Amino acid sequence: MATIFDVARLAGVSVATVSRTFSAPSQLSAETQKRVLEIAAGLNYRPRKARQGAASPLVRLPNAALGAIGFQFFAASGDSLAINKFYGPVLLGAMEDASELGLHLLVHTTDRSRLFDEVPRMMREQTLAGMLLVGTADHDILQAFGSQVPNIVLVDNRDTDGLWEGIVSDGFNGAGQAVHYLYELGHRRIGFLWTSPEATTFCDRYDGYLAAAYKHGMEIEGSLIHCVQDQLNPDEEVARFLSTPNRPTAVFCVNDHNALVMMRVCKELGLKVPDDISLIGFDDTEEASHADPPLTTLSVPKEYLGRLAVRRLLLQIQSVGTKMENDPPIVTQVPVTLVKRQSCRAINVG
Image (cartoon, rainbow, N blue to C red; front, top):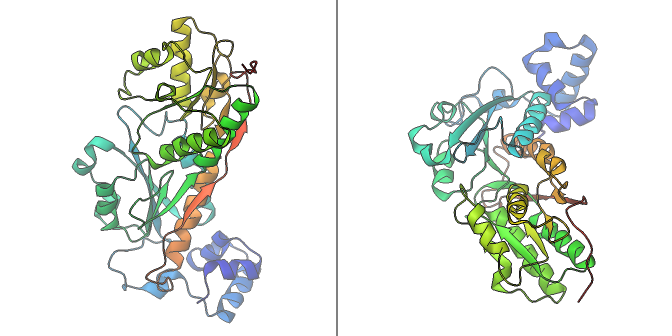
């Protein structure tokens, strides 16, 4: 069965133009309309709305030919998309691609602790063709949303039950880059600071750290690794981690937020970065480049994560009726890049 992508490719236009040919032809020239309609007729393509009719009880599409999709952000306490330096750019990328593809993007933020007190209206009314779930892979949450929404893509997470598609950054190889860089600088006692061990992306970075350390023949003592339990007040835990008699000479932190917390605590303890300790983060948020000193980190293409998630979701929507029942969901890993700044220095190998 021909898809909107097939029509767009053969007609030499964007997917959004094909969508407008059927939903808003007045916005296009007569020549463009004619070319798209001829290609569509030759491929026996019909817009998804016309193909589906009322066949799917889960999806009642609005006026747009491709319908609406949701961007559901699960926020930690006190967080929001307006201030989140990672998921804010992800949303921007998703909005740009949704607009290009002729999709309405509905955005909702829910506090993770209050999810079932405020199930999003867009989900309750079942007006969505699909949804991006951002910031969680909680089993109960996925079950609740999966029972109401026909197509789901997890953003910056993977489903451990193997039911839903996911888009993640390559934390395993990113951690390998960080450890290898520190090893080349002469560091042999490389620590790891992290939080939220239930987060699959953080586990990827932890596994990558361990694998890289093993590859380079470094012994990993328990004192080199710390998982922060009190994420609202982490300073005391980080201070204890840094005050051990044989502290690490460098620390790879699971994200920039934790690296910046460590940088702050170092100053409180009178430790200089990178003279006394080298630091590497992960994500390359805006604060990383403005830190004192600027933070070495792994750069994640955040806007691209959002754009790619929209495209993967649209592929799901367009493949209704053609996807094999037992096809496993795809988890797409997006490469990350080491950004070298002034928070790391070379030391003599002892």
